[in-house]
Amino acid sequence: MHVITIPLPALGNRCHLVHDGASALVVDPPRDLRPVERAAEQAGVDIRVVADTHVHNDYVSGALGLARRHGADYLLSADEAVDFERVGVRDGDRVAVGRMSLEVLATPGHTRHHQSFLVSGATGASGSPTAGAVFSGGSLLHGTVGRTDLVDPRLATDLARAQWRSARRLAALDPDTLLHPTHGFGSFCAGRPAEAGDGDVTLASQLTTNPVLTTAEEAFVSDLVAGFGPVPRHYAHMAPLNRAGAGRSAGRAARPVTAAQVSDAVLAGAWVVDLRGRDRFAEGHLTGSVSVEQGPQLATYVGWLVPWGDDIVLLTDDPTRLGEAVSDLAAIGIEGVGTHVLDGSEAMGARYRRTDWAGYRTAPAGVRRVVVDVRQRDEWQSGHLPGALHLPVQDVERAAHRLPAGELWVHCRSGYRAGIAASLLHRTGRSVVHVDDGWERVEELAIPTVAGLAA
Figure 1: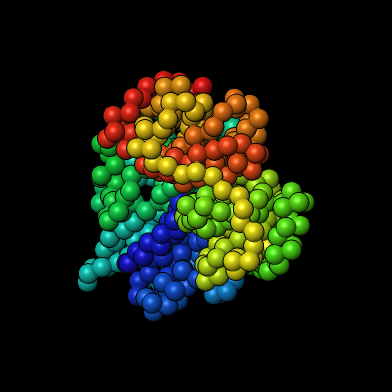
Figure 2: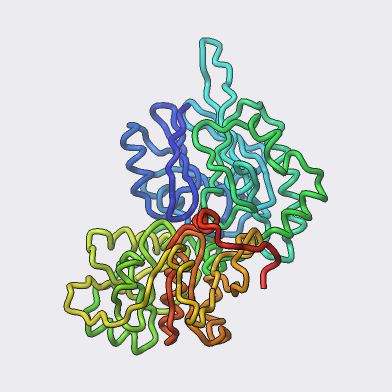
């Protein structure tokens, strides 16, 4: 049995292709099927079975489309209500995938009908089963578990208890079993920041390090539920899309727009999103546009900030990367966006200053400086600048009018989120300075910080 892990950095997840040299199983595939099919082709295997551990809350599943393209069975909990045909499976069911055996394990917690899949092969003359691998989706993760408040916040505590029991069930398997979760690599579906989990991670490695396996049930449940962070706004739309089978297709194609249409979009209040580097944006951009630098976090923050269904136009000066951006957005159900390639003829008259932490420390004292920290609550509580105002990036658009007068110095942990926030604040007419530097530099430069509750 061979496991090929396919990183999905734009989603903060991983997909897994498991094969015996001829037949393959795919667990939790994304809407963009290209990396999965490329992995299968390179391995020289046929995709025979596709499985989702749960109805996903953070992205559009590609399982239905992949199964139909390859004539494969699509496994999903029989208790899930969906608008398409699939092979409904329940706890204890066994499915043959070539020479491999898949056993369905009910592991509720992340969702009510969540399942994990224990896959083993046969080896040696006796054909005795190997320890195999468990594909745990949003149940037991590397160093944590999946959060339990996404289905319905009112169920968070009950599902957290189920999550504790499910994790213990998985931990009772052969300690040499490899642990392959879907979430925990940047997805907000993780209950806590997860370990990187590179290389072979076994259940044995989790027994003494994962809090769900070292903490009594009620203490664990209380701590887990109390620590949940914010939920990206687009998550509310993912489960309905997945229940409707939206992932059966790649989504509506992008539509090129002209420079005049970009101007019209700005005037109409559409979201004109500039994908260029945040440094280039600060140097000059179209008035009314917003900076969301293209990279692994693009879809998360566009999905979080832009009201669902609003018109979006993407701007770039690198047409070779437009397809990547469009695909990343389609992965969370944002389709048919407008696209425009900047050719240098556009009036890029809007700009603001950028600096680093050294520039912050040496700034003239005469300026009325309002420091705006756009990190999340847990980051703020671990340490922040004295007198800074806490305004998480996802709340900037809504609460910008409450910020006091003065020049807004905006920062985060690395500069990425601060670039988004600075552009949003600048769009409202405020004078801003983007502190584009790593938070670790604050300690290196001996800039004072304090810890405490979020404002």
